[in-house]
Image 1 (cartoon, rainbow, N blue to C red):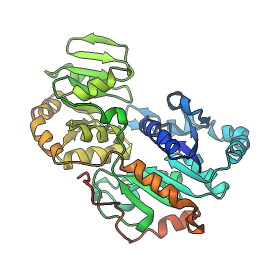
Image 2: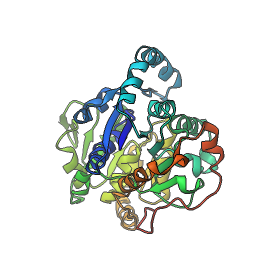
Image 3: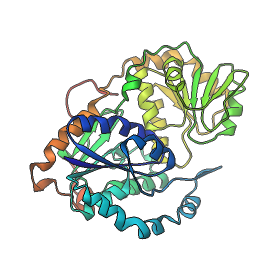
Length: 374
């Protein structure tokens, strides 16, 4: 089967996932054409010879996500597709795709509908549409996240939804809740808790760095920093040292991205989330850390808050010990659903309204009785 796989280049979570998914699909006998955007994503996926497209990077200011700056700095996006859209669509059509797979990449969704091919969505954001968050979180960022999710994944034949806490959801057999994928190199780690606290920043955060200087602990920091050592702070560029540091760290302090939290749960690492302001997905992930008892969060933590988190590591580790999930379930379910795609016309893409107005009620979305997170 010929699979077109669109990978979001915003952050690297979907990219690292693709590094695991593409070889698995190829091993199953599928041909895969990757579409992505962003220099880091394009470089990371270079081994698969991806087709370069344009995406919508998010921009953050001192107050968090800035919609005005995001729109302003992406004003060239329509022009890109006016100039290159026909060429890209022709190249994809020449691949003779049987099915499209989107990892929160909206242009892939558009191509699937334009070429009248089945679409499979694979992300964690669709959980928002089938299990609403607590009322206190249902403000404008939540509504914006729901709208973005609908636009990115509308009309899929199936939704593979990654979740930390799999329970019943609406949507029937088209919704498959799965445990998040853990990369093979992470699964091979033998975790300890003898190393420094690992700090991972997807955006520069000078205020947090200053707070860390006030905490009586050792930190190894990955982000946009020049490699150096300053007292108990070690700044490193992402490279070969990252995975050993992840495996040895006593805890994690990081932005509240889904993929790193999944790694932390798998490796049994307590997690302090510093969610990016205005990005609802990160806010929801951060609340999960606290509600599951495996960590805590604050958008602007102070030294006392971080010190208290470190004092409670034994409690968080006990909660983590009770969590378990299948680290390959996501890929297994994808392979299973791809085998179903040629079965008949019932899997043709549905319209925007059909995809969401027909999602009220249905059977349980879980796949099996294997151990689940939460």
